[in-house]
Length: 273
Length: 52
Length: 67
Image 1 (cartoon, rainbow over the protein chains, first blue to last red):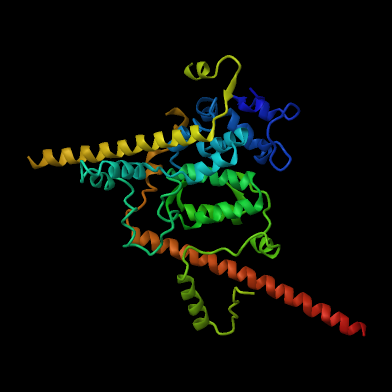
Image 2 (image 1 turned 30 degrees about the vertical axis):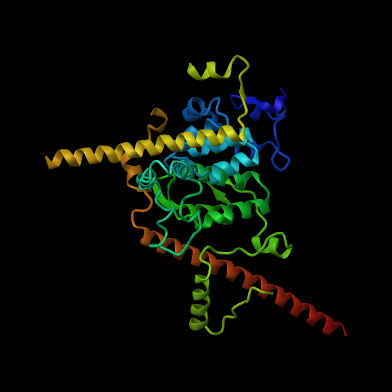
């Protein structure tokens, strides 16, 4: 068994700078992505000691599925949210990319399995599958009424556990490379699901797309300063990124028309340059 | 405590594979779906009762 | 759950995160947010281009002065 197959149950090795021999993120101990005060408050917290001890990338899902809000630290004591503690756990585990992507985009394929079963049983029972569908998310066939968007992100089909999706997005922003950050997170800008966020004072409502936009544009989120990302325009200039395509698609043209109508002096820049 | 026995004496946790993560999420998804169904069934039952 | 002990359930439940209650309104609100983002992105591009043009202008100016 290679030593990589195991990790420590607690954070001792992670917090011991001299002894740290785990995976590095941009050349440094991943724990240092959180500020010292925040790290201390996390490792002193009851949630960290009782609920995060001994988690691995799979059992962490149990905790993440229970999350009811995102946030950094709260109250005068700066108590860390469960969300922040789990993010710190991820910095300890440094799971492989595919696992983070699974958190981010998990989609339960039980519908498809049922479909297959239904197909193979088609001879004996014609009606078996149809009753089940109504209990599901109901978006496989029912996409017509609200919008023309077929984006599985918009429908909440991807990233079924939305607070786990937030957690993965936060981790990706901290731990991955700029181009990956943009290409992996930007599809979430069409995920309009509601997200409860805990602030120092109380709770506020935000949205998945808003949270992701904040991660891409702000320099501080969830009690954590986000390392400076090169701008999107910069990466486009270097031809490392294609211009972002909005899930609004053709509807963006309406915006163009609106702009032309409202202020004639603004030059609309065509994107084919 | 329960969690201590799960990790053995070494204090080391086995890293999980992608398949284990996927399996875990499917399981959690099923649990949640069933919980939601129970709520619906429960509601239906109560509606039935109130009609009687 | 004692690790949540300072979370006031009523405070938390005051913010309802249930999706799909009013899909049309939720979509409309998202669309507004997305349009704002697009406008912001375009403004940033225009700003960068304006800065670039200004740089060009100054360079041409100084070249002219050198002659």
